[in-house]
Length: 167
Image 1 (tube, one colour):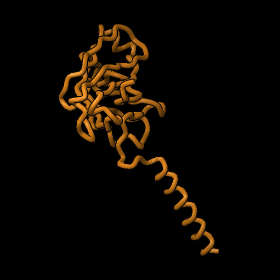
Image 2 (tube, one colour):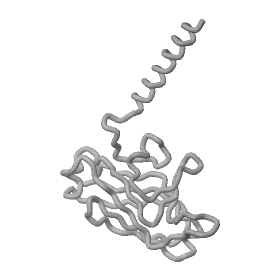
Image 3 (cartoon, one colour):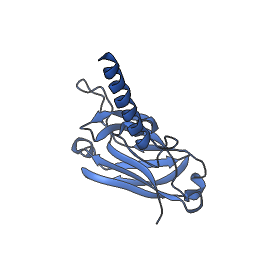
Image 4 (cartoon, helix red, strand yellow):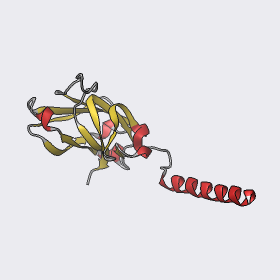
């Protein structure tokens, strides 16, 4: 009986490992990350809270990720896309400007004047995308906290961040 249990454990254990290998990327790096996906969490460099509602994370006013540029980006450039929610409490502070850099190259800032769901989407020049992996840094000019009730600094509710090929 013990041999059967051990055999079943080995069989089920190896099945789970195969599943993970199918999901895993060749080198572990993606062009687009879902901040709630554990497979993408290693690409979140700084400025993120824990996953909430299995779907998003709060960011601080300065946060960064590492991304793999999409195929052809070193020749054609790419689009940097950040999907996020601007919470009402932060929107009440006034218009919020989101700025970004890709490997130190500035990307156009954008200002959001009301609470809601948004996509920050701007072109990144090919000159910033020549490496296998790039660092993308974001900043906002408004934030909340920390407070007695919540020790975190809160800026945006982030869902995805990515570099997508230009069409």
